[in-house]
Length: 554
Image 1 (cartoon, one colour):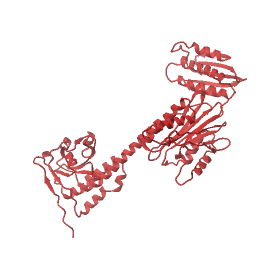
Image 2: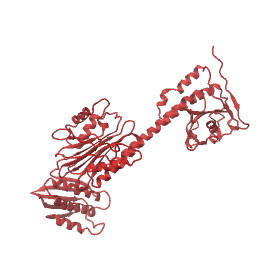
Image 3: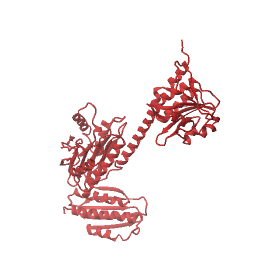
Image 4: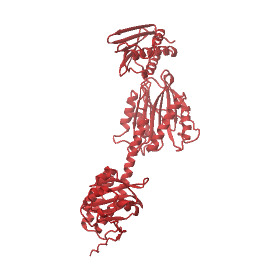
């Protein structure tokens, strides 16, 4: 025999409020249709939705279950001590207008302040703060607090466009809906916050990684990066142009995940780049970065590897701080470098990273990577490194080495950890150099590096190659300065050897114009002084300057 329904306890408020406080009360035995509605409201699948979808679906189910015209949820802004309209059905204007209700004021504010259910039989004669409720001609309201582990997170209320006396079953249903909904809302809100943080961390990390890699003749570089599936880490890489045509190549991994790790990654990358460009070698650079890490209040820990490559000699200087050893692949096959690593950055005060030097033979590629690429639960590290070496065995370029490693070790669904790879090759310089360049003064440094690198293949000494590179750069500057009006344009540089002469041709497709800034005659004097022969040809379709210089070791 079923027990009688537990009555709702009513406590009238002071005269003129038009409100009744309802004590939390759940029927001892609910009817079948109520049980069915409760199951719909407590559906576990709801908690898997993002916050917006969760609230939308929840309010649809609440409105259907109670047979009401409106349903709304206001969430607590703790700092402002206000309730903020977050989702609504039949009261969408609340959300669109960003309605805020102070705690303790009006219908919803009273519910939040006293943490009790409140029923309003006639809105027209009640203390209502939100004018939208009257504008929508709502006659009766019922609201309950949303509480998670003793903490108020918001208010849920429903309304009817016709006078209605909400009974014990209505209250029980709304209370149970609130009890089930509150944790779901908190989970969904946390999920949304984590999702937002993940997106921000990914954007931050990608913004802190190089937007492009240096284009150096004879030293092609390549890189790959993939953030973790769920939480961004602190993996990073960099390729740094250094004085005298050298290149720095670096990789690192900050311990931890999320925005903090991404921000620290940016600081470490910037610090390493700055110290490297001051002229320090790999060991000293990592030592200075470690000193920088020691001063950080977060007391982070990170691993890093940094190498400097000299294309003229093929020499590579390398130091690591707790990082995995780089791999080398080339005509003689793949191998993992035997390195003596220093301690991770931030692990011990005044840590040292031993430096070693090797020769990167013509055609060889050095590949640096983070542990996310190879480490798998339950697999020995040595086997993981061997697998990587086998995958890149046939790589003939830096780009191919990165792609083979990525394709072979990163599944389509991604990994639980970040992955970063950066590779550099000591590539043979082509016999003939052909560069298509933007008519922008920024390319002139690249021109000088390319010419010096190309001349080094023919045994030209540093002093002579510097003179020639400067002269070619001046010819290119003339093309940029005289050939085009401001705006996008391009020119071409070719270099080849004819009868032991280095022959350089700079060709543009503009019309010769006076210099935009001052007198450029100095550039022509530099060209004449550095070259054995100079010929200038101007036509309606453009200008060509051909320069010759006898090759030699001097």
